[in-house]
Amino acid sequence: MQNIAIGVSSCLLGHEVRYDGGHKYHSYIEKTLGKFFSLRPFCPEAASGMGVPRPAIQLRRVAGETRAVGVKDATLDATDNLRRTSELQADWLRGVCGYILKKDSPSCGMERVRVYQGEAATRNGVGVFAEYLQQAFPELPLEEEGRLGDPGLRENFVSRVYVYARWRDLRAEGLSVNGLMTFHSRHKLIAMSHNQSATRELGRLAASADTENLEEVADRYFCRLMTCLKRLATRKNHVNVLQHIQGYLKTKLDAGDKQELCEAIENYRLGLTPLIVPITLLRHHFRRQPDPFIERSYYMTPHPGELALLNDI
Ligand code: SF4
Image (tube, rainbow, N blue to C red; front, side, top):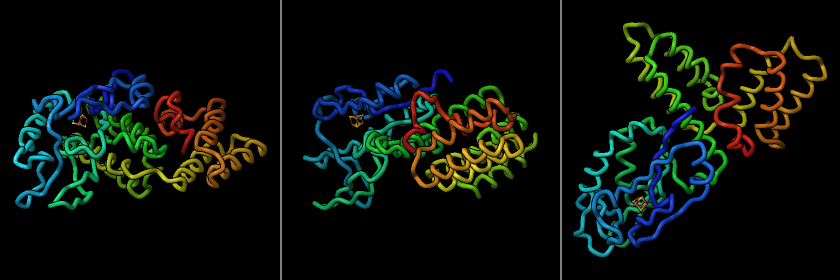
């Protein structure tokens, strides 16, 4: 897929926009993800005219509300300015398929940002810009740079970005009842690896679409799909999906190949090998014994192989 844009907190790309004039360069984002995605840097604090360098801000409870105020001077309240600046970004944000945010920031932090009350702090805040993203684009895949170091979270984020991009393409082509059913069929195994009962509900929802209710059903479908995918896929669910796929080869493999495939799935179940091992073996068999459903499913090719994201989960 071409032209998948991802928003990124500017400081993570080495831009010197932090309050102290520094940056928080993250090489995996630029050097690895940057090869596959068009990275769109944005710094909400710099964009709202706070200057670089500028007084540091923090989240603080003020009169029953969480506000972004100066660390040294709490009368400096940047909240409304940051909110206005965030809303002005809506146009270009409609074009991104994911967003990587700087953790702990009172503007960009996605979760667990410190909120001060007196001298004490509770880690339950969301940065002002991140909160805007969550409210205005609830299906948009968001992740923090710190969490990208976890192989499961990293794979989950990138996989969601590709699903989001494919949905955007479907919408751009023009939605149809058949298009929605095909989309579901191609993503069904991915959804199963996250949540099997939610996948059954998604199937029923997609099947309920007709020309009268298509828009409304499609919106609900996508919202539920992205909620389902947010929950991390489990090894147990992957094993179920792998065995389900194996079923398509039941009459096509000889005893030796069947045994080898069972062992590959079992070794994955036991945590002895990563997911890429049984998937590679399955791909090999389906190259020789193609099946239209499996061929069109994104489960075994959710993102470019060069990212090697299935090698670590
Ligand atoms: S506001 Fe966001 S992008 Fe700007 S320096 Fe802070 S964390 Fe980085």
